[in-house]
Structures are given as C-alpha cells and as structure tokens.
Amino acid sequence: VQLQASGGGLVQAGGSLRLSCVVPRSIFTGTGMGWYRQAPGKQRELVASMSSRGDIDYADSMKDRATISRDSAKKALILDVKRLKPEDTGVYYCNVFTLSIPPKDYWGQGTLVTVSS
Image (cartoon, rainbow, N blue to C red; front, top):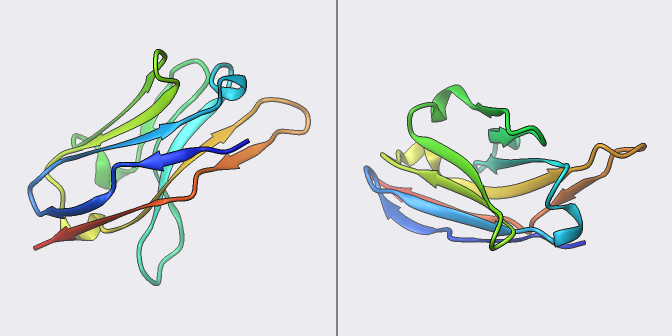
C-alpha cells in the first residue's frame, strides 16, 4: 500500500498552498487520516487529522489557517493552508491508520514545503 503526496514547493510568506495525497481505494474509507510535518532538526508533529467519522482536529498553530478534507472522487486527502509562515517549513507527510485489529499505519513519502520570508 503506497500513499502519494504532492503539492509542496517554495512559497512566500503570506501565500497559500494545497497538498494532496492519493490514497488507495482499499483504505480510503473507514480509516483515520492526517497530515504531519517535520521541520529541520525537529520531531514530526501533527498538523491536522480527520477521523473515520469525519471529526477534525488541528494543531494550535494551524487553527484558522488550515483545512483538511477528503476528495472522494479522486480518493485523495487534501490539506489547504493559507497565510503561510516561515515556521511552516518542513516535510509534510500524509498518514492513514486503519481501525483493524491490529491497527495498521501507512505513510506517504513526504513533500517538502519551504516558506520564504
């Protein structure tokens, strides 16, 4: 199972971007999904998550700036971020976790976002 993340790049502070992660049909429904990021020299942290029921949670730093959503037609997990800041720089990873027993965790390869000041 492979997740394909895309949409990263170089963006000026104050700009916006859309990240997309194509998720295999077999794990697109009935699973939790999320976006994480890892800044240089720091641990990976949660940016936004969506449960299988559609409950959404955002990191405090992303509230009012980020929107996580699912595109059922494209079988993709989307992250829209506006008013980007230099501290948003990092590699962004998409994640899918199943509710099976045992649960399974899938990760995309990461897409680099660089926000210039």
